[in-house]
Image 1 (tube, rainbow, N blue to C red):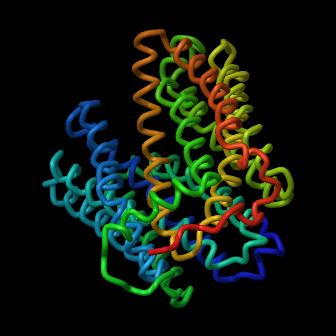
Image 2: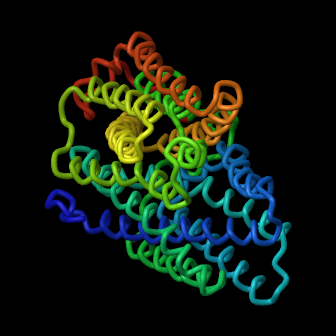
Length: 413
């Protein structure tokens, strides 16, 4: 991606961008190799599900602790430590594989460790970005970051799958090297001051993120809109059914369909870097979620592969618009001293929506069929847009990302 002049003036942000690119690509490759190895060992779809559950559970269990740590320590150091933990996991998997003692329990245990690292990493990354760029270019920085992450999400699994043919240790070794590269880049940023002083841990301080979100309605509306839309509109879990039974393609079709939303998101992120959204951000965000719902309906009704691919790409592009606006709005409306705790809650909501969305799709597909499940999700997304406009009128009328809040923020504990 071409670096815009507004971001080229902030070398620390660009080094952070490269660090995130290394970390995201490594994480994607690690998950491909780990999943394949688990299935090779057990042949159980249930065990594959346990790998995902093992990584999700720590995110929920550690949400309060993670937010508190991120707000009271150097966020650069927190992200670097998370990359270091994932390096250890990659090396441990490589050693166990080469030594012939890798097992189901070993993989699940390391998956828990991965989940614990990500519980701190994801919100720390979100909270660190506003420290590296001024508020007026944050939306452009968010779009640029999202574009790089989408590229890594597309390329990482493909590269990991290709290298797995040479053996799982090869993939794990490259993952470890990329994580080390990420740590090196993060260290080069220089120390970033903690958002708040290190004060004694209290219940009020731990739960402050939830309290802040509840009282700041624009932030609550943005985060809950993401949760509801992804919960209802996701069709990813049903792609094998659509590819095989409706579009009559093979595994290659599933791969292309799974890549379509990321491809659309990547193209849109490039456009948003060049032409950032500066006016009527509330209307644009709700409009993008509505387009996401319509694209989901088109996918559910389509029986032609190219149309299904285009619909998924459009859903990814629309989601990218709403993601950039939501994330920028949440970060800008949140005081720096609260960003870690608010980002931790936001990360759990995002993770929960993806996990629960797949579960919801499976349940409704069992009752209504795959097409019925996707159509219900598309209609549900449109209903949510209408309800949220009425429930959060301040958010719908939001003109600019940097608009001053209607009332002061609650006191930061």
